[in-house]
Image 1 (cartoon, rainbow, N blue to C red):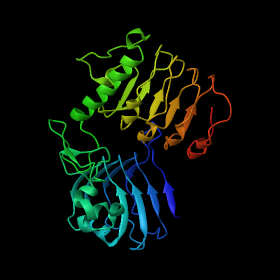
Image 2: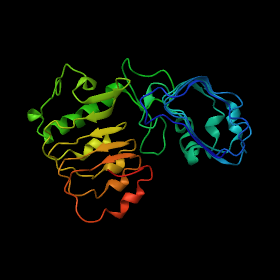
Image 3: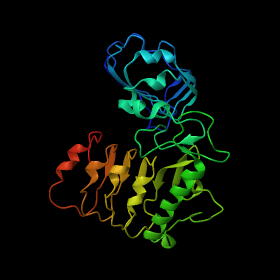
Length: 300
């Protein structure tokens, strides 16, 4: 077995639960994706024990409930890329921080922060991947005491609120059919009509189909870092795909019955698996970039 993909990012359930297995007998393993499940407990000391030290291996464990330390035994692996963000890790052994080739060389540049952001800091990836995205302080009561936080509700919500306010302004929000709580300073954005959040912190869905949105939604909507679902169907909007490459988590985009005339640019939506453009004004052949949507089983 070389690859195992059992992540639960596109499901509403809690996914797989229980302790994390060691996978110690899978010597040929190269890709292991178990993100957004409900694994608990510590990472086994013999995790990936039979994988060759010189092999490049990628492990995705983001968004589980793993606790404790990252095993120092993993230091025997020369080229490990492991995502442990948004767990409950409380220790990163200094020995791991000297693994120069880990995280595609980022550990050699940024040390421990390239593995996981320290407690009370955060960035979108939960770790530093480039000089332009350092781990930044999270102040207030929501500052995490664990390593690898990808969000800070105080900072995150200010940024995401500004984007939602722009959406409201540019699509005639005052004339929407429903706009419960929108722009109310006393109401959290996670309680605005059509908005759902993960852990009451970050926007994961905007469901405003058939709500009389008019105009052009702002391209900044693609900068919502954890947006999975964008449903704007049955609204007379002028939708553009500019900037969609910034939306690394967008899996579902429903634009049926919007008057859409072109889907140029959608090929850059690398995570898209659900794309509905029925009952629109599309003409001619589909752009060749549609083939770039590797996860799209079919086009509606």
